[in-house]
Amino acid sequence: MPDPVDTLKVSDLPLDDLLACHECDLLMRKPALAHGEKAQCPRCGYELYAHRYNVIERSLALVLAALLLYVPANFLPIMQLNLLGLTSEDTVWSGVVALFNTGMQGVAVVVFLCSMGIPLVKLLCQLAVLLSIRWNIGRNYGLLLYRIYHHLRDWGMLEVYLMGVLVAIVKLVDIASLTLGLGLVCFISLLMVQILLEVVMSPHQIWQALSGEDVHAGD
Image 1 (spheres, rainbow, N blue to C red):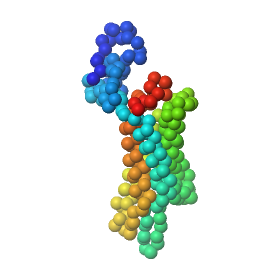
Image 2 (image 1 turned 135 degrees about the horizontal axis):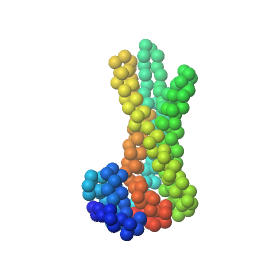
Image 3 (image 1 turned 120 degrees about the vertical axis):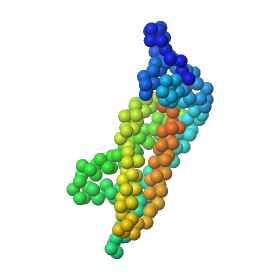
Image 4 (image 1 turned 180 degrees about the vertical axis):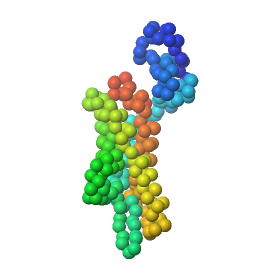
């Protein structure tokens, strides 16, 4: 664990050697980590950062998997609804179109951005950042794209959309015949891959790699 810093001695230490906990604001010395180790706040136990193995390769594999899942997750049927002899297949995209055609253009735009647009932009930013590190080109653009990605993190709400789908399934199951589609499996898989990507793609190592301190970021 990092060592807390005496407030009277802060001015004697370089800023690069200091670290503040995001949860309790404890100021401490930045520890040097070996591969596979992680730093935790000695006061609240919050994980400050970790030094993981093969961050770039593992993150690239997850980003590519997420991009492959993106199209089927959004355009394959999530469910098939049979009500009073009428059958309809619903996808994420068809939901956006239905909202737009029923006069709720504002809601349609929000749903599109949060469930399709922003998640795609986030994945493309992550891919560009990882490739800039892997190929050692365009680091300045990589820094810009990684900042954009961090600003967009809270706007991609796939989990909220999934909860809405699950609530709709629970409410409709008693009044109609429902068949779950491949699109739902792909959508859940996409969400799981993105969550795993958040864990694997260590921000500390990515920032280090983009600044040129550690080109391979844990390889």
